Amino acid sequence: MKKRFTLFALTTLAIILTACRTVPETGRKGLSLVSDEMLANLSEVSFNQLKEKDKVSKNKAYNQQLDRVARAIITQANQTTDLPPVSQWEWVVFDNDEVVNAFAMPGGKIGVYTGMFDLIETDDDLAVVIGHEVAHVAAHHGNERVSRVLLITGVGIGLGVATGGQDADTQRAILAAYGLGSTVGVALPFSRRDESEADHIGLLYSSRAGYDPRVSIPFWEKMGAQSKFKMPEFLSTHPSHNTRIRNLEVLMPQALAEYNEATRNK
Ligand SMILES: [Zn+2]
Image (cartoon, rainbow, N blue to C red; front, side, top):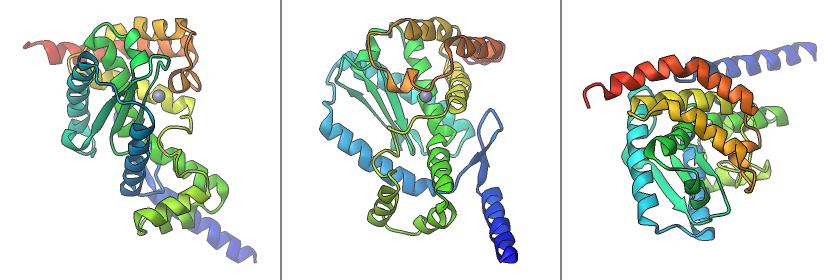
């Protein structure tokens, strides 16, 4: 019995060790037990459902601004990651002025609610938000979050490996059984560490895309100061305001150097 348990523990350890990958920019080792392809399939389904449920905004200015900034930042992220090319990403403005929020799903789906644009004056401001969201995707926080839940349920290892070769319907059914099917992209909150990491990586991506990183501090201050709206992504598990600003200040010299390099010949 004891021997069998040891064997199980060793096998589990071996799988976890081989199921880690390095997060871009920070170098942290992240857990990755489920296939990216499967998560991308699930994201697509969730995103399509959202587009049917929530009204998609036809506001030309918002859509053009999002298009411009998302393209520029994803292009930078693609320089150092294995993310899908810009052409395979999708970004949508959702029409709801009451929601000051944005989100990203594994595989490259981004949603920004019109309420967010009330706080956005320039492309530099929007780049703070989009950099953060693209960073969640680049760091594979979605995969890590699902992996962590599967691991905690105790069936994670077998399940994670098993879902790899299943068709999309079976994958959905399996994950739905663990309450993950429809929440894989949006509803499960990221941890504070993931949020700080997204700030970190996002600041570098937006700087390299030529957006002024210095606006991030007043922008997050503005976000923190307004309490009129519900902000599931940006306030629920986000680092405390002071921690967030302090972290940005520490990173600012590096971000400014990247920004100056990117804008030198413009
Ligand atoms: Zn976030």
